[in-house]
Image 1 (cartoon, rainbow, N blue to C red):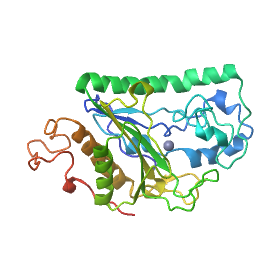
Image 2 (image 1 turned 90 degrees about the horizontal axis):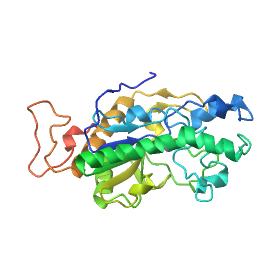
Image 3 (image 1 turned 180 degrees about the vertical axis):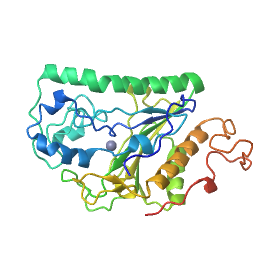
Length: 298
Ligand SMILES: [Zn+2]
């Protein structure tokens, strides 16, 4: 399989914004020309791309912010100031100088080039994300922002998990993550039979600075272990969608709907995802019911 089905073209009407910053695979020529060894590009794309996350997390009615540009050009999930960015220590700040194997990827680019890259491939997408959140706030007075990622089943060469086993799901939290939101996601993992860790192997949740700690904006990072939905025996080889990808997508849809449903007024949108005229919510229940969730094991 090469693609997941995606229902596009539905205008956002849910108080839900999905940000998939690492799904892009396009490395623009300007960025490619700076690579010291372009023959290594494919393997590095295989390792570092959050494959298919724009489709896995795509939900009709939710706003989706997903750049086609690869993190090997600019990484949207990084601070632009290397002094603030912890991953700059391994050459993977907003513009990578080293690959995931610790090898030199490109020389330091000159400041003018850096400014151009950020203006072309970084700032427009952060602006879009900010505007997607603003549109939700204007329409609903609230917003759920989901920072959507996937991660390799085993640590890459420049990652140190300190011997811990990687979970099926990693939930990242921050100042915009209320306890109810984390509890809902943890409960979803339990119902799905998925192992989960909070802020491991990756931590935090990207929120536009203007909305940091804004109580109207609830945010959580959801990272899916690629072993759940990809056939990729070696992280350096080209991946293919595994048979479980449809179950993963269905389960993620239920998670997104459930979280957004808790954020919105109880009962205000309970027909979403239900057959017309057959809405069946138990009194006081919110979001997805257990029976809505598909069993997911691997
Ligand atoms: Zn990612």
